[in-house]
Length: 310
Image (cartoon, rainbow, N blue to C red; front, side):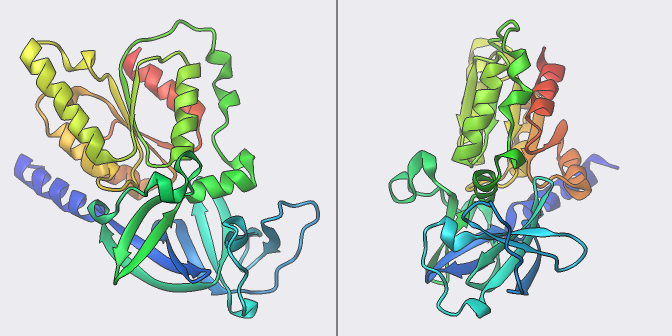
């Protein structure tokens, strides 16, 4: 493949991956969103089989096809009023983090195509700061659509589905490293767990960002400082760990900027996402991603960091 064709393919890919397909749904008269890549099917509410001793936000299970799915009552989780017409409720069947689940909502409205740059970080004052279940907001047709952190919802319902710090606790006694890491993750909840795991593993020099745009601006400063002082870029950043879905700038766009930069291109980029499949891997590899890992495999993430920088 010629360098010109590769550049065209990279630009086309970034244009495509910088867009989010957002499924809009409602609860309690408010609009919310989920990345359509996490949704496998939308269906009317069907008979739900109750389960004893389950979480209070779990209505039971359904088997719409060949898999039994846990039904999570999302309005109840968010402490919103129940539907006045329950038989009209909808089920969003999802798959992410290698987990299948069904989320009960009131209505499903439409699918929208947005640029990640049009998605804003939520206000910590309005959306709860460190306890927020909202990762971004977008204005669509005069409405504010709040994007829900479904990974956090799933973890709160069933902690076994999320990042397990027990995977890295055996590493707590090893020699600490001061090599500089950059972590980019929009979920406040997941960022906290990732940083805890990295610290347990002995990495003490970590800079974190909740969106790709802020991360890129920081990396530009690092590059400029290294050029001005004739230092290697590894003195400022030795590895970048990034999510894909993020407001302002997504992880693939961030990767392309880094890999097209004369100095930053040598820095390994590890994508740590709940939406890793063959297509995502192929896209990332074209842009220069060095490794793909699926959440919540935190032990594998630490091993990959070790592989690239120790």
